[in-house]
Length: 614
Image (cartoon, rainbow, N blue to C red):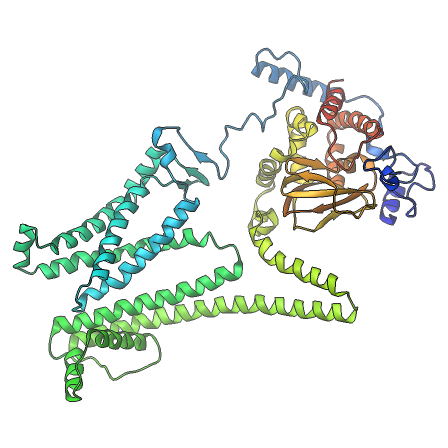
C-alpha cells in the first residue's frame, strides 16, 4: 500500500495514526477469517483506523448564493414544465433529461409503426436476412456462370433445367422480400413497411423487374405448349431467348451490396483479409470466364475463318473431335493468358478477333496490376500480423523457460492469450478503437460522451439527480472522467489492498467479488446494471477484496481524480456533494456495509435527497 500511503500523505497533511497505511495490517477485520461469510464490522479501511474523506469533501462555509439562486430558478422552470410538481426532490421527481428522452431516436434504434405488416419486416442485420443474402450469393454465382455459357451449343438436362427454374423462382421471392426489408437511414434502422416498400420501388425495383421478366420470358419461350412461342420459334427465337438470358448478368450490380452485408458477419481481422483475397480471386475468375465466353461467341458469329474453325481443322487432322468442354477450356486458357504473362497456340484469325484480343490485353493490363497490388497488400498485412504474433509467442516461451515457470501457470497463460485473440474481436467497440473520433471538436466530443455514458451513470441516484440539477456538471463528468474498459473472462479488475481510484458501472457481463484475502471460488456476483467502487470518489481507501471477471465484461469507468477536478469547478454542486460525502462516510461505518460494492438504493436516494434538498 505504499502508493496509497504517498497519496494520502500528500492529500491529507493532518496527523493520522501510524497504522493507517501499514502494509502489514489487514484491510478491515473480517469475520470471514474466523469462518463466517460476511464481515461483522467493516467500519475501517486500513487496520483499525476509520476511512477518511478527501480534503475537498470536508464541510466548510455556505453554498454560494448565486449558484443557489440559479438552481432554484431551474427547479421552478422544471416545476412549470411538469404541472403539479411543487418541489423537486429525488423521491418526488423520478425523471432526468436522459430518462425523459427515451423517445429520442439513437443510433441503432428501429423506426416502427405497429401496423399489421410490421411483424413481417426483417432487419437488415437479422440472422434470417443474412442467411437469405448468402443464398442470394449462391443464386448470383449460378447466373454468373450459366448465362455466359449460353453461347456454347450445350444440351439441356434435368439438373440444369431445375437450377434455371429454381433460381428464377428464388429471384421472384427475393423481389417480394425486398419490399419487407429494413434499411439504414442516418444510422437508424427504418422498419416501417410503407417506407421500406417506397425505398425499394425508388431504387432496385425497376431493375429487378426487367431482369426477372426477361428470365421468365426466356422460360416461356422454351415451352412448346404456347402457341405464340411456337410462332416465335419459326424465326430467330433462339437468339431472343439468349438475349433475355444475357440480361441476367446485370445482377452483378447487386454483388457489392450482398458482399458488404455478408462481410459484417466476419469479426476477426485475419479472416476478413483472407476473404478479401478470395474476393479478388473470384473477380479474376469471373472476368476470365466472361471473356472466354465472348471470345468463343465472336468466333461463332463471325464464322470461318476463326480460331474455332482453325482448331477444329487441327483436331480433325489428328483424328479427334472437338467437344463443348474442350472448346470452353481452350477459350478460358486463352483468356487467362491475356491477363498474365503467358501464351498459347490459339491466335486471332480475323479482324474482329484481333480487335477483341487487343482490347482484352489493354483491359487485362489494368485489371492484372490492380489485382496483384491488392493481393500483395492483403498478404503483407496478414504476414505482418502473423510475424508479430510469432515473435511475441517465441519471446513468451523463452521467458517462461528461462524463469522456470510451472507448467500449470504456463498453460493458463497460453490459454488466456489464445482466447483473447478471438474475444477481443467480438467485444463492443470503444472510443479508443476509432481514432478518427479524436479529430472531432471538443463540443461534439462532449455531446458524444454524454450520450454514451449518461444512460449508464443515471442508474446511480446521485448522477440521476445531477443530470437534472446541474446538467453541465454531469456532462463534464462524462467528458472528463468517464471512459470504457473491457475485461476478458478470468481477468482481474482490482485486488485486495490496492488503492481505490475509480468507480465502475457494469454494462454487460458478470464479475465475482471475493472479500478480503479469500481464495475460494465462491463470492458475491456482480452483474450488469450494477455500480461498484463508489468509495473511491469520496474516501482515501484501499479495496476490501478482489474482483474478477467470470465472463467477458464491458465497464464504464469513472476516474476518481477526474471526478473531483470537475466537481471543484461547480460551487453549488460541490457544496451538496460535501454533505453527500459526509453521509456516505457515516453509511459505510454501519455493520455489514462494503464500500467496494453497491449500497442499498433506498439509502443512497435518501442521502442524495438530504444533500441537495436539505
